[in-house]
Amino acid sequence: MKKMIALGFEGSANKIGVGVVTLDGTILSNPRHTYITPPGQGFLPRETAQHHLQHILPLIKSALDTAQITPEEIDCLCYTKGPGMGAPLQVAAIVVRVLSQLWKKPIIAVNHCVAHIEMGRIVTGADDPVVLYVSGGNTQVIAYSEGRYRIFGETIDIAVGNCLDRFARVLTLSNDPSPGYNIEQVFECGMFCSIESVEVEIGIHAFFSFSMESF
Image (spheres, rainbow, N blue to C red):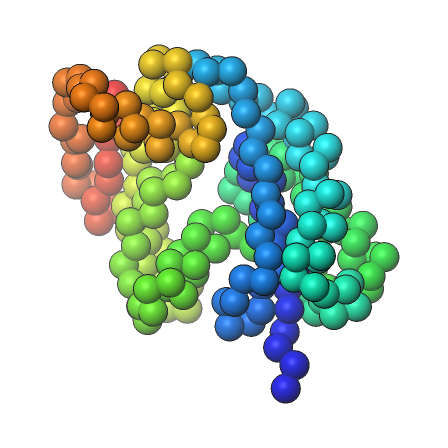
């Protein structure tokens, strides 16, 4: 029996990636390219989108070649619908719509947060986890309840990822491969600083929420 094959596109931030994956989660290819700005600087949506537009077509070819498949063997096209940066997301969305018309393939729009959770479920084998979702601009406690993922708590100001991005810019660290990774390397080399503890508040509309205001 032929395994269903999906061609997926992720371009929600400064990394553009094109992957080929089967229904059981086997990754056949996963080429990607990161938009790198000078140390101490962030990345703006317009410039990030231009980067994605420049690299997305070569990445598609690389993904198909590495997976050793043709467009005819693809069953569906998937892309990150959001959340993320608007202009970079739009690049992947437009390319997917064009390919759908050319190749006559259905499109599946994917929620960025749910994709992270589902990848975690595949890697860990967990059936029904309670998830601390910390990625980019999101810091949330999420669980599956009554047929959908529900947010039980989240940051009440900025996300942990945004905090790390700001901290890396203050230290003039590169975003290659990621600000958080480079902060970790600096601290492992013996550079320490005082950081106040994270404030945890109990709210009416959330089981618990986080505050990163002290950062």
